[in-house]
Length: 361
Length: 275
Image (cartoon, rainbow over all chains, first blue to last red; front, top):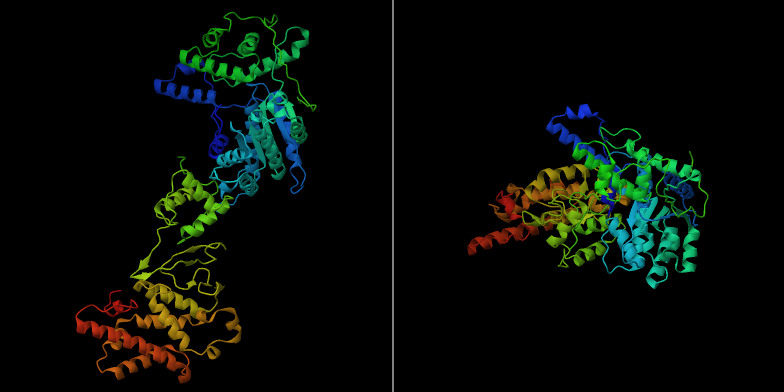
């Protein structure tokens, strides 16, 4: 997934809407002439590579936390700190994708709500969302300079940390920013001096900007951010940590619900695949093997299915088969294992933390 | 070297605005100062000179503000009259303080009916002042005169010394607008007179000598000055004669010495119809 590195890319990212190709039967596909077929394939490949939305249980829970936090910021000038949300989980669980999805929805909603007067209001004055990856080297000044650079503000290196913070804060306030999303939070090392200062800077920044703060990072409760207990405690008191559960595919009667959830995910993914010969239920049938190969990671699954779909288009099979999956990942078995006899057991270790989550329907 | 990209919030540049106020306003709209942006430009190697009007700096700020390539290319002079930097009409700049150079505009903004001269901008309702500005634009500006050219300054001085403030201005208007504004119509009429080829010919090369020149000047003053009070008018008379005699002397001396006359006030060009 391409991460926007500045506000222009972010706007392009938000504005981009992949066009879903019209579904064609195999007969209709073969009736296309060469040029039409090339154009159709290009359209399909663009759709496959696009970040299509698949609502998962984790996503619903994160949205709920975001709504809670957003509602806290509705009354301006409260003067008290607002709680943010920290999305934690293993890598390839879709943390960044979920975070970006929340940000996209927030930006679209904010833009739609904002009254615009043609010719009077400059759209460039409005920046409801900042989505930002933490830099590798972290000091309070580096953090603020990176944020400024993301927003396109040319601050010189000689700027003091205080001034950089002031510029960023004033800019966000002036441009109606109501959501600040910071990814790669696990890079913060609270036990070092710079890291500790950065945690304090983040804390102060979060308190001074009237916006929802969302963070994402790998295994935050066990990360270096938590190495200094006092700082970690301060940080966690201001934010709700949600640890993504991900998916699992356990054997036995007790795992029926988890298995159904995984198969439901595969069904949703299958529905968005623009393959002419793909039959409903093809992917859920491969559920145990896909669970085994991808370790129930949604990121790995998406990556595998994208490649498989593109190969199915190129090869003309127009269907994701075990052979295609095996050609991409040799660990994928060529024989289909029936769902009633799961071959491999896999369970995610993570469980939700700190807050009970209503998963909804 | 990082490429220069436009600042996130764009800022409109007003007609005639120079880089000094534009850079300050554009930076401020992005929560920065112009010095910070210049410092960044220097760090990135885009800027080497400290000259605020360095071509590289102008180009950089054009990029930062997505401005037209000709932005900040302001007129330096018009027909040898220097175009002075001044505060632009607050109405045209939506209340912002912007400085720049505009030729072709006198001391009044006709669109917003504002007095642009010193000491501060004020709204104008007087029709004669607005008419005077129209006259400036249609006649004097076309002859290459600017709002503070020597001709306009001489005309302003003659207007000041030739009128009685107590008689010319009613108490209510005196408090609202500066005296210069009320004298603007008279100033424009004098400036127009001084740039008329026939008048210049008459006072420089008066065929019947000094007496003839004095008569031409008296007739002109009679036409322009509203109060026929000799106690006040003699100063204007004196000043006009002083201007005329200096021009005449300069032209005569130059002719005798066989070189071109020095056009101290950039006025003699009008005598030959150069403008």
